[in-house]
Length: 417
Image (cartoon, rainbow, N blue to C red; front, side, top):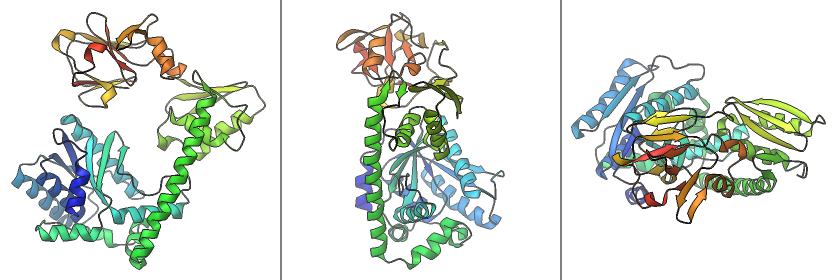
């Protein structure tokens, strides 16, 4: 187990801080111990939902806090009183991920390690099959984004049994939550009743079935994405020539450009589909997050509330900032970052202006042409953030281009679109 996990860990750098969600159970305590011994900068977050007897939650707190105190690991505790009992698992999930994000801002990180393991993967697949999740990825991903957190799971090839053996081998104290052995919630029933009756061979067959499902899903998505690319011109979706059977999947790919996955329901896809098939030449549909889908004859497009807005923000020095159009942050993706020195300030972050030009490795380029070359939809170009130094020189257009003079420098400022 240890060799497998350490090999997986090699892809994560040690020079940045990570939040670790630790409940006090064997999974998260094992995770914390491995990360600490491997030299990672960890910050521990522990949540008490106050739904179990005080003696139980006190024991969790004692185990986690004492481990951190002995090793001088930053420890943050949250006691939550607002957890909805009728939808506990979803409510608790939101509470802890929001807590991770809140503490992460203190340390300028949104990187989170969690202790999900192979047995959790089995449970998740069985739940997804029971719900009929044919259009969803089956299982748990090694990496995902949840409520602003970039979540890493390095135990997905490790069984619960191996984790317990590790804790016993190294005398890692942990406390099992007794509610995990109940059968009130569907996941607990699957864990404690259904999985207990499955053989190892049946569990492995479950993983094979999930991989086949996910491969089919990937091919389906690639095909619908290719079809969308063929019918998307300057942000407008020309749907008339599409095969009717392909239309729902292509609509899904189009909505993904503007909406987070959790806001794209089958009902929403069906509503857009009905609008496109309607004989009326002009229709408008209200979408989530203050968007509208507008059908005009043989095409449709999404209009944002800020589509025609001009904006301009000035910064005399770096500090974290967030508005409707971008975040100014200390971390982000490689193509969102740039190195700024004192000589660059004050900087301005604004939207596109006619005549904008940036110095690239291929010479001076019009920003309008870069938008076209990068297939940025017309409706997004007017609000795309552009970072300008005190001399009015464009230094960065996130995800598109970086000024030639800043290509080889290590980023210290990130403009997250």
